[in-house]
Image 1 (cartoon, rainbow, N blue to C red):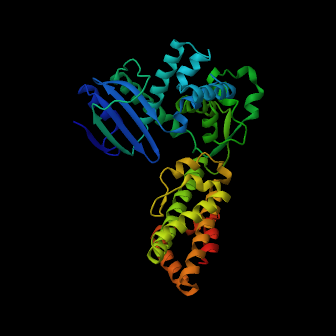
Image 2 (cartoon, rainbow, N blue to C red):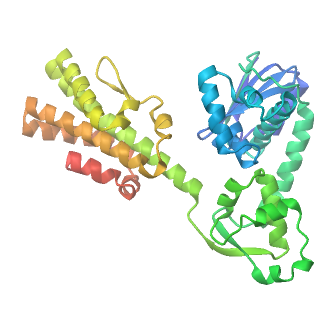
Image 3 (cartoon, rainbow, N blue to C red):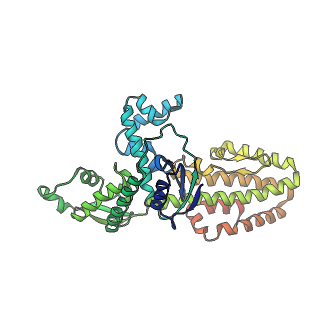
Length: 388
């Protein structure tokens, strides 16, 4: 029998203990924000784990650890495209690793994904009985209780270290006076690697991203360097994670607002013209799509509705610097074309009434978010199109 709940009331450690002691077979699905992870069990032992977090991606971990370079990855991806092989088997095919090395890499990858969940104190989980991952790389069973003990130990150490370090957006620099007497400095390999990333401009968050080590080991290195007086705080900068989260919120908000407004206009066109109204919407969409390629990631249904399923995920492949602008420009251009279609049918006065109706429907979504939309130029595009 499956079960579900929230991590703020039941810890991941408690769930592992329950599954291990009950010798359960199935898959545990965990979700926190946009991050989803899966852990599969057979008779209470862990046999697989996966994650949609970019930091958990095998290729990113191998790059950070210096085990492959970008040229290796490019070759591997080309072969994967041509042969439908997965990454681990492709790495063996290219002779970059042997089968035993790949097995160790996969095992460490699975452990890394699982240990990352121990730090979650919020989110949802669902365990589905007898449902197993569809993977070609089911690992040798991991002792769940051993993982539980190691994960708990890491969390205890993590709490101590992170409590002694400043916030993630803190910029660190090397204390030159401490480095002058090099004979007194004895750095471990880990500490030396982390110290090389401290340049007076990078924040702790950015050091974590560039480090070839996991967050715990990188934090260990920073902690040791800080306690030895070798590095110190020099300032703070905007958190990249906060910026990414904010931009994603803007994209989601933008999609909701335009979807509401466009749907109001769609209803008017279909009421006035029937199927001809649907065809006009589809024709306008195909026309504007030629000038705004970003709209190719949106589907249009048989009744003229825009289908934004997977749109946010697809556009994340675009350069971050231009992503919001491209989406805003494309959607506002399409909306402008639809408004002109409505005006040609119902006239200018009724067009204004329809726009007012559409705006009123967006009020709940936009409440408290207008300044955020203004910050990224989204509100100005919408304002210009609707003449708010």
